[in-house]
Length: 442
Ligand code: ADP
Ligand code: MG
Ligand code: MG
Ligand code: MG
Ligand code: MG
Image 1 (tube, protein in one colour):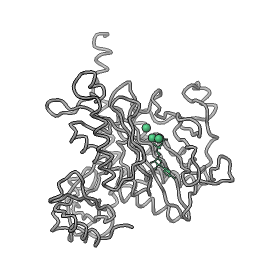
Image 2 (image 1 turned 180 degrees about the vertical axis):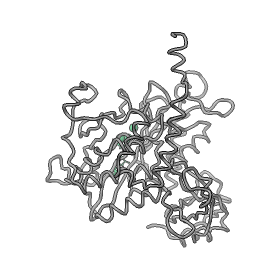
Image 3 (image 1 turned 45 degrees about the vertical axis):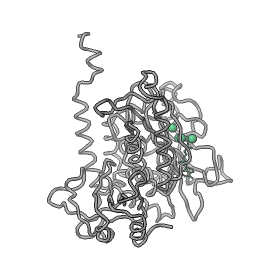
Image 4 (image 1 turned 120 degrees about the vertical axis):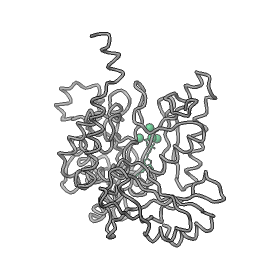
C-alpha cells in the first residue's frame, strides 16, 4: 500500500524524524535537496514550500523563478545511516509553477507524461535497472583517485576486501530503505560492482535509481571509498553500464508474453523492440549523456555498438533474456548510469509506444557475433551503429521529432544548450593522449 500524507505525518512522529530532505533532480539527474525541519512538514506536504528555481541547472529563467515543491508521500523513507535521535528522512517532490500547474521542465513530470500516454493505451511499464559502479580509493587529501580497492592489495594499502565490505553495507542499507535486492556481485573490471534490485513500475524505478546512486555514494564514503557512476573511468577496462530491463503490463498481465507466438514473444513486444531500434540513435543522447559515455560504447567490453537484437548473445543493443511468463522482458544494454533515469525511461517508453502505435516491425533477430562481421556484412543485414560521440547523438536527437516530443520543448532546449557547451569544452581541450602522440613526433 502506498503512503498518504497522513501516514507520512504519523511515521515522522513515530520514528522521531527531525529533518526532512525534499529531493528532486535537475535535467542531468543530479539530486537536489531542500532541507526542512519536521515543524515545516505540514506546509511541505500541502505543497506550499517555495524555492528559487533559477538556482537549479536547466530549470527556469530568473524572472520566473518561484517554484513549488509537492512531496510524493509514497517516497517517504528514513536514512538508516543517520542517528535514531533526530532522524533524517526524505521525500521526492514534483515541481509546480506558482499558478499550480506542473512545471514542464521537471524530469519527473516528463516521465509521468509518457507514462500517462502509455496508460491511455492500456499499458503500464515495468523496469529493472542493473547499475554498475566503481569503488576507488581517496588520496590523503580525501580526493578520489582511480585506484581500485582490489588493486590496492597489490599496492599494499588496505585489506583486499574493503570494497566487498562496502558493498555488503550498501545492500543492507538499501534493504532497510525498502529495496528488494535480487543480486549483488563483483563485475568484470577490478573495483567494479553491480547491485540489482527488483523491477517496479517506471516512476518507482526512476526514483529508486536516484536513491540508489545517492546511497551507494554515501555508504562508500563511510568506508573511505569513492563510488563513481562515471561510464568509463579507466581506458582499457570495462566501463559501467545500466542495462534497462523493460516490459509492459496490460490488464494485469505481461503484454510481452505470448505462449503461442514464435519465441513466445507477443506482437507488442516485437513492435516495442522495433520502436526502440528505430529511435535508438536519438535515445542515446539521453541514455548516454556525457562525452565519456561514448568511451564505453566501443567493442571489446560487452557494451553495445550495433543496433540489433537477439535472444542468444549479449553483444547486441537489445537482448531478450530467456525467461518467459511474467519475466518476459527486453534488455536495453546501451544506457549508462550517468543518465537522468526519469528522462531515460521516458524516451525508452516513448520509442516503444511509437513502435506499437505504428506497428514498426523489427528486423529479424541477429544471433551471430556482430563484432566478428565485416562492415559489408553488417550493411547487407542493415545493421546500423550507435552514435560514436555525444555530438553525433545530439544531432540525432535534433532530428527525431518523437523523442523530442517525449522530452518536451523546455527540457529539450535546456538539454541541448548544456550539452553543446559540454561538447565544445571537450572538443577544444588538448588531451593528454594528444600530447603523448604528437608532442615529440612533430
Ligand atoms: P542480467 O542477466 O542481464 O545480468 P540481472 O539478473 O542482473 O540480469 O537483472 C535483471 C533485472 O530485470 C532485475 O532488475 C529484474 O528485477 C528485472 N526484471 C525481471 N523481470 C522483469 C520484467 N518482467 N520487467 C522488467 N524487468 C524485469
Ligand atoms: Mg546483471
Ligand atoms: Mg544477472
Ligand atoms: Mg553487469
Ligand atoms: Mg544485464
